Length: 370
Image 1 (cartoon, helix red, strand yellow):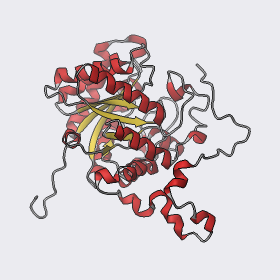
Image 2 (cartoon, helix red, strand yellow):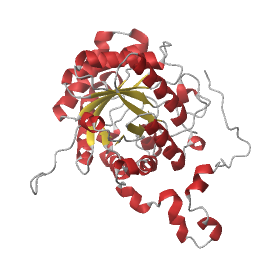
Image 3 (tube, helix red, strand yellow):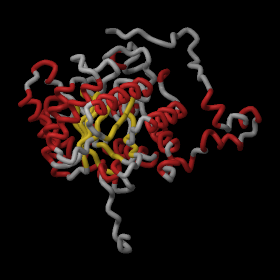
Image 4 (cartoon, rainbow, N blue to C red):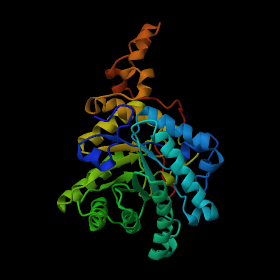
């Protein structure tokens, strides 16, 4: 035991996953902060960490209280190609905010990078790696706990990101924003996972790594994709920790490009929002697949994260602080004065409900624009 008055050292990300623990990620920042008035649609860059740090801090706190074990730096698209001279200050401020909140609980800080705006036009490996390395230098200075390369639609660029991030010697997670059809160059999910697994193994001799999917697709599509990734790794005899951070929206009608091609993106997605009960099912199915790093991306609110934590509380052995205000499976409704509402205070009701949208003239599905 740690001496009295001395904080217990936190377990690292690979130590947690190697021990079979469930790691709960965080959720939506860009779309959530856009709705709250702190992010502008377009490049979706995170100036808010400098301009409105209290807003970012509050969202981190909400995710921590809901059960997140990871505070990911709000550095999506915060590379020099997108932010010019502001990139360094934004990355540094994002690290400070994530660390401040992580230290209030048993959470780790992950420094995050994503695909560049350069790749699809130039595929200049040297230039792209330089952009990744610039952010990595800030993460090294701020001593983040591990690194995440996320939101890659081309596996080649994702491999380059892994190669750069491994230079720091810290654990690396990598996720692609692909569906069951694979990346934008028609590399299958299984093949993507193998390429990423081998890229990590090249630099990390123990073979420990984290591979998965994030964003672009809803929970059920993302589960199908991670299953294909797992099968691909298994066929090659590669071992990897699996990670899934889906959208908080239902997207069964997406094409290969995901929700960005739907006509509702980005300002009319609300009818597609997953319920907390949907997310409990998502968490359980991910767990059954062997995924132990489970979180969310765009549209994934703190109550969705709480749903993951509540569903997997038997495995984790505890509930998050936010559950103090939430009865399991609607049990708080037992106090309601109306008997028909009290009758909803049971798991069977919410598990089997088919929620209506309240929009009688709207279709249930859309046709992607591309």
